View (cartoon, rainbow, N blue to C red):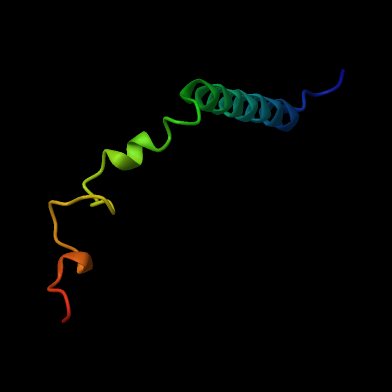
Length: 64
């Protein structure tokens, strides 16, 4: 009788786990939609170009 090839079985399990993880990430990104990716960036405390609460170079004294 032949001996079991445990290395092959382990590799197949690893490949199945990897495939399942990739499928999960793919379905997650499809559900998220294209417009929601930018929402996480807007939620951060980084000032944006249109933020008037912090003076920028445009708010400097004119003619200086």
